[in-house]
Image (cartoon, rainbow, N blue to C red; front, top):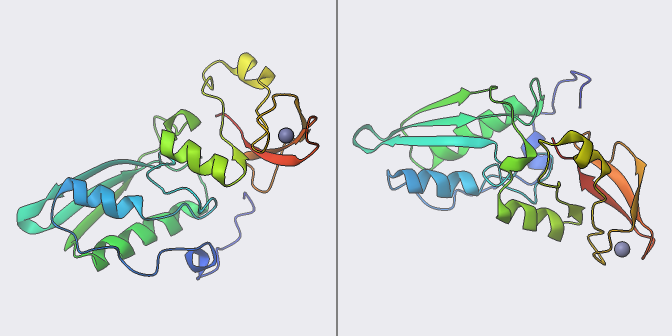
Length: 186
Ligand SMILES: [Zn+2]
């Protein structure tokens, strides 16, 4: 999305935000990560903000029940960034974080290499082929033929450079003939 159009107020509701906080915060950093792990990405709700690699750091100060979270958006100026920040504030405050600071960090830039193994599995289950892990080698990454999420064949072709969202490309499997989304390496 790059139109700059305002997001609907129920942005997260429309994309399957969690309605209930899993458990009250116990004051630990591990507890922060557990809460953050439960927040889905607004554009790909099958994957959490943590597994997508958007949450970079989480720190706690148990004595004052305060916390600090560092996030890196998937691309600078991503219109979902503010919605993501607000959802983190909403969930952590509801879980009992008294004082919360959410810091936006844009350098180093987010890369698909930050998607966790669990995140890649979730993408695959959702029918999106996860990005190849050679994003740092662009010529090779562009030549890479992603496997079909249904039959696993690498006999695939790109139909369109853009799929349902700018981060995905539309491909088709030449083996089972099914189209599928490929999460582009970045
Ligand atoms: Zn196939």
